[in-house]
Length: 365
Picture 1 (cartoon, rainbow, N blue to C red):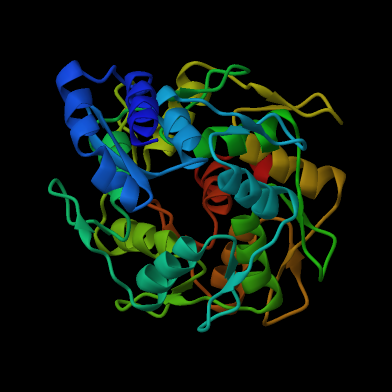
Picture 2 (cartoon, rainbow, N blue to C red):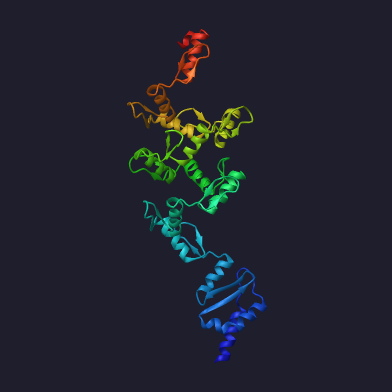
């Protein structure tokens, strides 16, 4: 009986091989010699060039082969995604297709589908830990992957993800997918439960609810009284207003910009004359999608979402609201005539004054 058992064991080992590389004869002979002690503990040790792996006997041997051969035998019946492990398939179905978020943060209302994401959220958001520092600038990150992405996109200038429907490129795959979903498919899957507004990204919906319905501005400038919705708005404000920085210069003219995307938009629209975004309700064309959206919202939908808190006036554009507050309620007159001492709240009023009074063009009076 023992002889039969040993022959069976040897035959089994002779058929064993790693999905990554075939086990050597030396390794197999070593395994044979140690098989009885390993088997007594209910496990078998497989050796390969990649190293030794301990697996429980029986069904898990197939799982080992799937990992090393790259097999993905478990297909989601809701989408075409494949998995090498049944537990990963189930996890995918639960989070993606059932929308389950079983791990709630005990410090805020946020919920997560994965426990690791919940722990990471608590560490980075509530504990404020940022353990990964960029060696090229002072920026710190809570995740190593975010640090690597930052270095790749910001310091190396790489944009590896190109849209196959337009010329746009992105540094992050998530940005590309969001762009395709919202711009080319026109999807807005996130609706505000307090108004009818819809958004293409959950983050945009949260910002809208926080600022419009809750009136929150959590980021205050320590150099003036201004408050901001998002941290990057505060950082941009500090850079422009208090530091006076404009790091992106146009090589076709003397104009400088605080953001690279503003420079690129300027070059495309001003120097190349491109207006790639036509309005489907009139003949107007625009250089950027944001400008097109603003035009449609104000002109064709008649929306005025920006209300003055000091009077009943409403505006379609935030910049017009700010101008109104500065001129009407604060009495700011920042545009002075060089030919006389008269001052104006708007540059257009100054130009009209100069043409009418100093150049004699009476049609501007």
